Length: 118
Image (cartoon, one colour):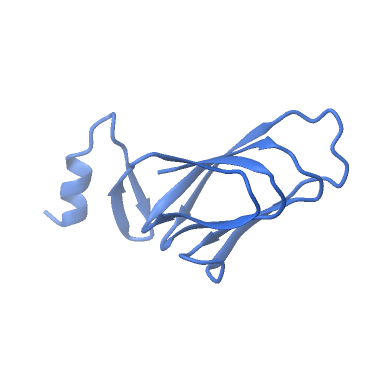
């Protein structure tokens, strides 16, 4: 039995297994909250960006998500908030984006976001 097969066989319903590329790993949920304009290394190693919640919207702010240990990694996606914020409630997105190297997020403005990474 290969290491990946052994890992998959030992998974329990409370600890799912994800596959990123050819690597299987146990999901280890982590919640990260970012509240300033910053470059943030959220997680290292193979993982999945499960969801992104925008808690406080800032006009024209951007949120860039990279597969990498820095913003020099592969860009997975960019979210740009509208230039005029009126009557908009916070929102969440279910993503399920796999990353091979890790997740780095670059935020502009004081946008308050919460990420769930597994």
